[in-house]
Length: 106
Image 1 (cartoon, rainbow, N blue to C red):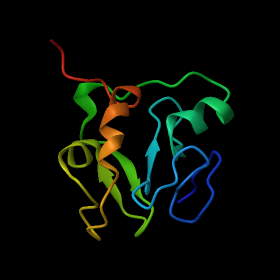
Image 2: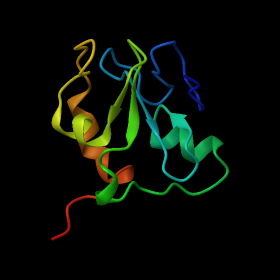
Image 3: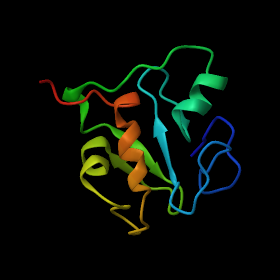
Image 4: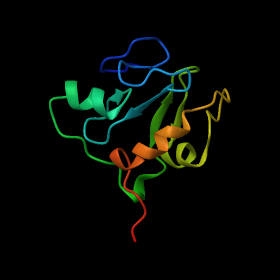
């Protein structure tokens, strides 16, 4: 799967986020392309990001950098790691979810 942006290794880590747990790429709603992070998209996409709406949680928008399997947004938001290979994801990514996905309406 092609990952755009400033990736630094074959497990989707980038120049902005490169810990051992930073192993996901996210398909952006606006362009359908995978990027390691919101900063990579902002620097290289040439357009503004669009967040995934609540009603599209079943979209296969998460790519595991270890096994290259995709996950639905719903599965990703409910998991601590890949549903296929069980590699753990960075729990700190939860701080940025609003940049990728519409959050629950209040």
